[in-house]
View 1 (cartoon, rainbow, N blue to C red):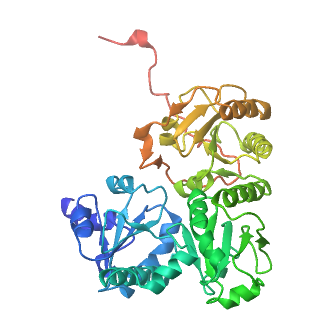
View 2 (cartoon, rainbow, N blue to C red):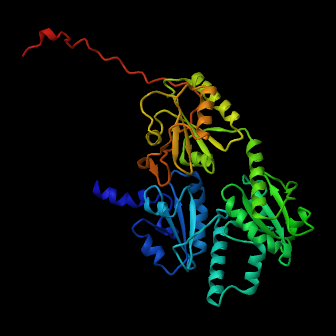
View 3 (cartoon, rainbow, N blue to C red):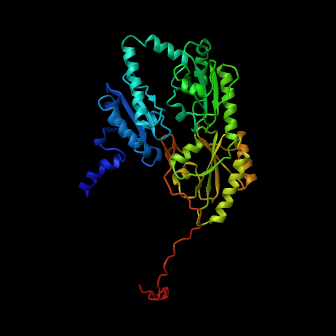
Length: 438
C-alpha cells in the first residue's frame, strides 16, 4: 500500500500538468528558491482543481510552455493545497496568472490578457523588450513618449485592431475607451487623469486606449475624427454601439460618469438568484458587490420542489426590489456547504436562514425574522443603514481570502425521497427484559 501511495502522489499533487509539459510544480516550500531567487522570467498560474476556467486554460498553458521554452519558465500552484503563496499575493480568484520579471520579483505583474498561449507569449515579449531598454540606458524616447501620450499603465488596457472586438465588443465587461493620437496635446493632458480614473474604477469598469493613427480599421468603424474621442461600451456592445462621452476630462468627472453608467447597466438587468454549487459561481456573483446575500434553504427532503420554488420566488421578488443596489444573490441547500454555514455561525435553529456578507470586508449579519418578502426587505434595509449585529466571517472556515466552497451538483428541480430502509425481522429476538438472566 505504501508503494502505491508513493507512485500516485505526484498525480494527486498536480492534476493538470506533468513534468513532460514543461510546467514546474511550485509549492510553498520551493517557490523562493525556484522563482524569487531565479534570474529568469517566470509565468506562474495559481489554480484550483475544481475550477472550470482553470481546466479550460490547461491546453493553452501547455502551448505557452512549449512556445516559451528556453525564454521563460512556466509554473503552476495548486492554491487549495499551497495556502501561504495565494495569501501572500492576495489571490482571490482562479485562475490568476502573475509574471515575475527579470528585475524586482517582489512586485509581480498581474496578467489580465486573453487566456491563450499567444497572449501570454506577447506579454513575455514586452517584458523582455522593457528590460533590454532599461539595461541599455532607460526606455527609448519613442517608447517613453508613446507611453506618456497614451496613458498606458497597469490599469489601462492597450487596445488594437486585432484585440478590440474580442476584448470590448460582445464581451461581458463594461468599457471606457479613449481614441487618441500620439501628437495630440489634449490627449497628453488627459493621460494622467485617465490613469487615475482607471485605478479608481478597477474591477468595475475597464479603461482602454487605442492609438487611432496606428489602428485605423477600428477608428474608421466608429467614425473617429477628432482627438481625444471617448466612448462608453456597455456589456455585449456591437460594432454599431458605443456612446460618445461629452463630459469633462478630469478623473473625478470620468469616475462620476463611469459610476452612473455602471448603475444604469446594473439596473437594466434583472438580478439573478444563483445556486451556489462552486467557488467560481459564488465569486462571480459576489465580486465587486457591496453585499452578497446568501439564503440557506431547507433540504429537499424537508421541503420538496413546490416548497423550494416558493422560497426561491420570495428571494427573486426581494432581489427585484433591490435591483438598484450592488447586491449579489445566491442560495444553498442546508448541509451542502458545511464550511460556509460554520463560517456564518449557522447553528441548528432551523432553515431557511438569510445572511448578508460584505465580500470586501468579510463581515456578515444574519436575519432574525420571518422568511418573507417584507421580512427580508426589512433585514436588508437595516444592514445597509448600519443597524444590526455584524460579525467577522470565521477565518478558520476560509480558503485564502474567500469562503471554502465544495463543488456540488445543481438541483434538478425535482422532488426527492429518502431511500427506503428494509424492515428488520425481530421475530427471533426476545424483547421481554424480565426474562433476562444474570
